[in-house]
Length: 184
Image 1 (cartoon, rainbow, N blue to C red):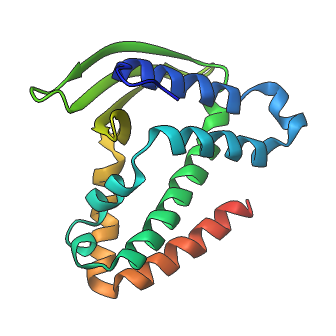
Image 2: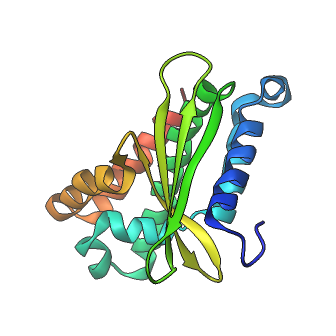
């Protein structure tokens, strides 16, 4: 876990090292996908603000939801992100991450870390991380891949679904989707 005062770029570098371990070639023999999920889960728990991400994704639906319903959404959203990410990790396991820049906003409470990920095969991908100060530490709350923010991407879909069908129905759909991802 990063100590207080650790720079945002160092947090992302630490996450990158943990993810590289999750994608390592020896991992398949040591439990494969389930072991990869354990490593990603640990890294996510330490470095990601899933509650804040969920609030940003749901917008107004978050504001009107009771705490229990918010908690259920955070849980299924977290699982969705981790399972989706775990599927992508193997593709970049033998690549390199080039750190380009890191800067904070005028308040010093939000940071942007720009990286370029070069897979062993295929074109490089721009990956930008947004972090914020939470509980005295830098916590990840958004990732943009080639300019597409996961917050913006999911907000367009989830906020609309929650408004049209209700948050409970959205949670049920995400849970079912997560089960399908687990079984693949």
